[in-house]
Image 1 (cartoon, rainbow, N blue to C red):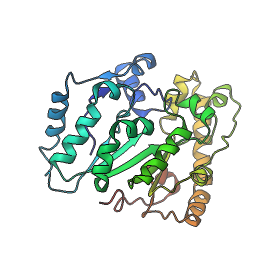
Image 2: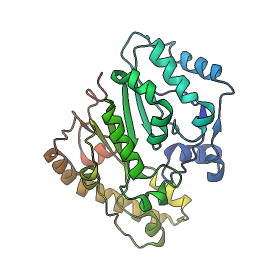
Image 3: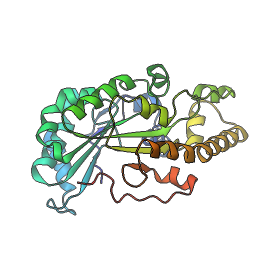
Image 4: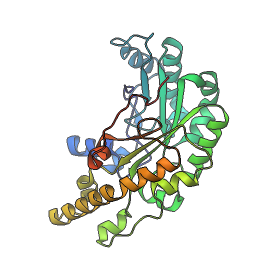
Length: 285
């Protein structure tokens, strides 16, 4: 399950953000408004009430998993001032037996702010980062205000040293350079999921792969409005995933990442590859 929205928007400004695309389609949000993130709750007490409302239909004694967060980055700069994520973590860890599954593109800030909490409850926390590229320059083009990949990787290494269970999600797996897609000349990225994993200085306990979704909306936001061109690019991306996913899974098996054990695919990517998805062991306690 996910935690309620105590922040609205996200300063990272990722071009592929499904949550922003939802707000753009449904409510007409502009990109510049989305990246001016702000708190939704006025006080920390309101955040506690928000979290406790989530307890109402779930027993605090059961081993549920709480994702922090799937709607925004819990450690964007707002957290330094408001500390709402800290309140969520403290409330859940103190009042339930649930496992916290963290996901952030600002893991260095996360460790600076809450390392004491992570080490105190290390057996109930999964520390996760998103990686789409290994190169900082490529990352800035699609995740302009997130911590660079090299910083995220160092934070992941630090989390492992602290004894935390770690996970990495490569979502979206972006095979092409988005600016060249807009110009109609396709240039491949140099980093594939396998190469990215091979470059990591530490081995995450769990790996998740996901495809680039909402491609039509992303291309429209980047200035492509031709339906023929959009369809052609969507077909090209689909063909890429279907072609390279079997090879990727084979190479990951050679690195001892086994599908259904410590390697998982998002439903969208699994559907393209005709792979049956099981989440039985995902973030097991």
